[in-house]
Length: 255
Ligand SMILES: *Cc1c(COP(=O)(O)O)cnc(C)c1O
Image (cartoon, rainbow, N blue to C red; front, side, top):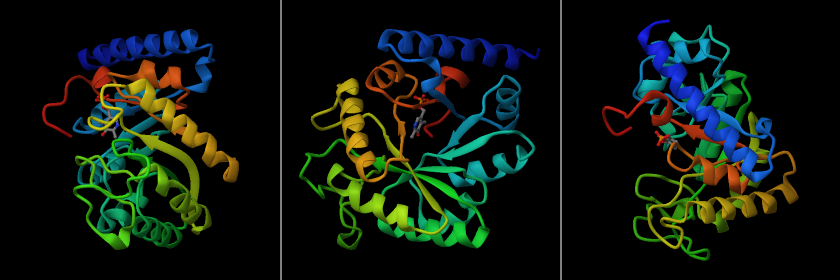
């Protein structure tokens, strides 16, 4: 093995151990949790190595980086997740390679994704990204960008819709041609009542998922947890964890 492959194999083994231990502690089966490796800022050669090591799900957050990487890895049996804030002018490109868009947070994005998915003859899975850093009833807070986009708010660059906006957006996705409503996603908030309380935040996401599944029973994905807090996410019931640095190393720049 190359040095890089040895390094990634060792990191993957450690992450695998952490997920297995977290599942055991929570009384869950290991198969209930899917590892998504976040490959942002790392080259296509790393994605190829990860695929050789058995990784099947990768995630990216910037279309400029992701599009060429996905093209270079088109021969690999990978599912690509898009996890970044998505501008509507990038949607056509993203729909070209993404199997799942985890960052759906406003109606205009749903419309654009649907239009491009139909055009490409693809079905795109969608997760509603939930922002847990605002009060429950607070629909817009500082940084709100547009009233026509309803409850969508800037959340320190993290995006997401407030809990009160999930249902409306979920119904839109479910009714949109070319789109499939897969579930919910969140990033542990840095501010607000859940700051520093990752597990409570992820448990809140699980409750919101339970509510959502009453009207959309197939929307079973719950994407939560990163390198620093995957144990809390597994304990709360997450079905997917998104792990970057613990597998690939500390990123050279913010991404
Ligand atoms: C970068 C990123 C991750 C992975 O974060 P790490 O701390 O590197 O594990 C997960 N989710 C999203 C949305 C990200 O942007």
